[in-house]
Image (cartoon, rainbow, N blue to C red; front, side, top):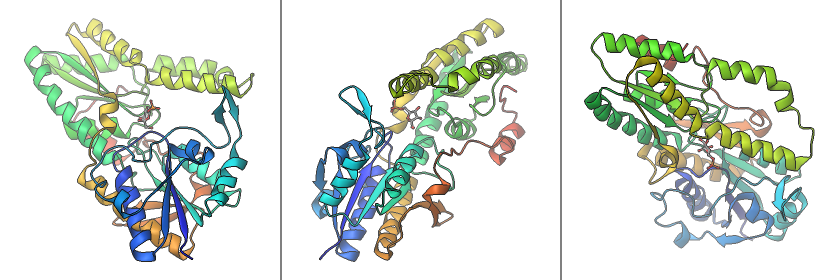
Length: 373
Ligand code: F6P
């Protein structure tokens, strides 16, 4: 009797997801003669038992496709929005795992997905995961697929903004994705030669940023490029959060209030107001015209880079090999040219943020990049 394996994609979409589905699926089908089904729209589709057969026809031609052929959602098994309320649907998901006669479940996603997979592992399901996110903030993996593609898109944006900034002697502020970790702004800022890089890990002093821009202006460089992560914030905001930290973190209401607060925080963190206000402040402080570009979802769109296709394929096929060996409860992490098995319990609840002494930061400072500190 062939083994039956389920695959789902969860969290924000990302280039490379389809390459990963293809890597896992083709190896399971071709090398091990297993059967593969996909669950639609992440854990919600598993709760609603919405599946699609992933046979060789379904897996053909998807290596280069952006997004995910399975669809995705941010829904969690233990806090699933049902009829306007957050319900724990774990038991239904476990039941559907059994009804589909699954021997294992592959979850492709970021930090939240790893946590959801761990939750299902504790219910006795055979779960194995791959790290996916353009933010590159999944711990204990060299890199997550999606990051390399987004890095290329963001770097090209920095390159292109140089033309207009130089021509108009302007400050061009480019907001990049990265709510809680600044890897995308840091990497693209360095690769694109941004003059200022602002990341959530280093609360910035807008006066320091303005002073760096003025130094450039006085030395004849009448333009500057500021790469800012959507989650970057000023020292003033840091102080306000510190004051209000206890209240903000405490949830006095029910799950509904928590969900509303989290949604507000996410929207608040990523609302253009943060970077728009920064652009306005810099114009006031420097007297230079300032313009804002928000790259947004372009960073998650389109075909994956060659690097992400390679990474997603090799982690995907390694995942299939591990399923055949019966290795579960782990994330297949990128490690050098190969992979490393990381227990899910070591991944859950953590986020890979940029260390303040990271070599990339040292390197950027060596080419006189300002971090607002
Ligand atoms: O987690 C990846 C990410 O793209 C973040 O960089 C971004 O802040 C967030 O997803 C946007 O979430 P959503 O797609 O739900 O709006």
